[in-house]
Length: 125
Image (cartoon, rainbow, N blue to C red; front, side, top):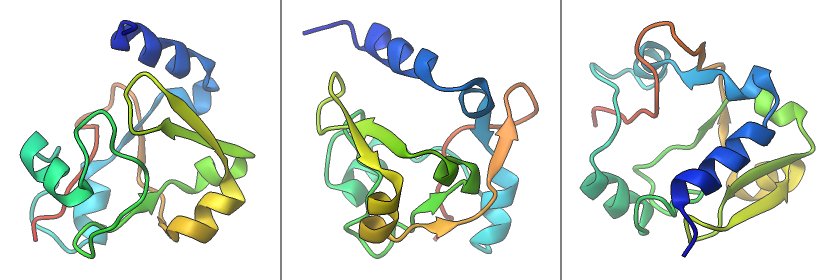
């Protein structure tokens, strides 16, 4: 099996800098979801909500407790990329198809790298 860190780095390096340098703004997520705290979910919680192991979680939700949010700038690109149920495989999906299938909530949730807390968020529900 290939080195997963190297695979992730190759995919990351192909992204344009304006996308590559962004991070999720936890304060924005907390406000949008009317929560009191937003942070990375534990592996256990993420796997339970997504129904798949960490590292293979697709950008879709099959659980009503897991709301999808997407940064509007990502929708300006023809395709989005994500892991295909294996951390060493990536799928490209037309952005319009992704929006039609997943129906994510479009919200400005970004923060440039190097400015405070960043990462992936969860609701305090």
